[in-house]
Image: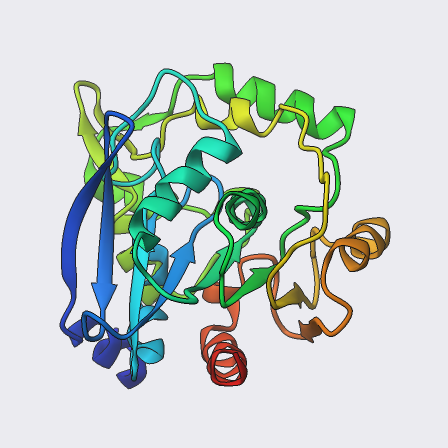
Length: 280
C-alpha cells in the first residue's frame, strides 16, 4: 500500500536524535530544524512516545527547532520507580534549558505536564493544549481504571508483526490509517523474553490516579484544540479550563477528529499549529 506523499516527505526529513539525563534517567528525543532557532517542544500523552510526532514535527520546523521527547516510562526513554506530572515537567524543562520563549504543544496527559511546566518555568512563549482535560479532576471510575492498568503487566505477543497489528492508541479501539499503524505501532513495541510487548511502563498509569490540583492560572499565551467527537474536554472541563487560561486564549475544534488529533486529522492539526506559532 502506498503511503501519502506528505507522510513520506515528513519521514524523509532530516532528524536529530539523542538523550538528555534528567534526575538519573535518560530522556530520548527527536528533533527537526536548525539548532538555535526558536524551540517548539512536542509532548505526547499517556502510553505514547516521541514517534507519534514524526509526521507532524518536520512540518513545523521552518524557522523553528522542533523537539519531540519521550517522557520517562515511555518509548525509548528510561524507566523510574515512580512517576508524576511535576517530574515529567522537569524532563521537558531540561530540554528547554537556555531557550528563549519556547512554545509547547501538549496532547492529552501531556497537557497536565505542560501545566506544571508553566508553573516551574516562567517565560514560555505559548502552550497549545490538544484535547486535554488538564483543568479537570479524574473521577473515581477513571482512577479505578488507571489503577488497574498500573497493576496489570503488559501484554506480550509472539511476533513483532502481531504486536504492531494489535497497536491501538490508548483509550481507543478504532483503527487508524495503515501508514500510521505501521509507523507508530512499529515504534511502540520492544523485544521482551516472552516475545514482543509495548514500550511504555504500565506504572505510568499510577500517576494518572493521583490528585491533580489546578492551583493557579496559566501564565503564558495559550490555546485549546478540542476533538470533534470523543473529546475529553467535556462541558465541565471546558468551563474549568476557561477559568485558568488567559482571557485572550484561542479555543478551536477540529470537527472530524477524535481524541488523538495527530492521528485522525494530522494535516488540519499542522495548519492550526502553524497559524498559532506564527501568531506567538
